[in-house]
Image (cartoon, rainbow, N blue to C red; front, side):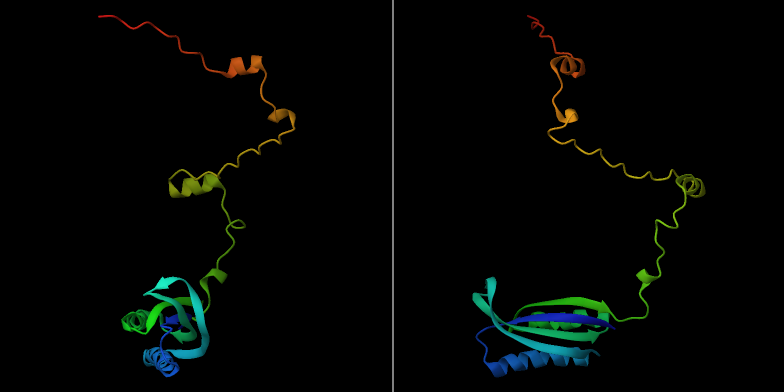
Length: 168
């Protein structure tokens, strides 16, 4: 079982009793799918960032529940069909299953093999560490100053010589 959070945006023109019945439909669907409700919080009417179905406001509800992950898609399908719900978002809050796998992982740096032995054992060349670029010197330092004329001539490529076009 996982813990989920569901945010519902309901039409602002619904009466209070219709709002409650829409939320009850959703909570009933969660319970019928084998889930259990943790918390249902009405947030009230709030202004939307953009229009949704010609509405500028919506009634917000936040629902926390625990359910098997395979059942979430069926609940979302029912939310999409409902005309009272403008938008919804379901997110995973935490995995409530047995032991977390990432706690059992060993730090990669501490147990790392030398690169030669990795290359020999796999039969493939070992990946090399990414090189870190050298820092750019500060503007006032000697290394940051532009080269002198003599230095720039030595480093520059030879200039192309113009040749006359062949006439036919």
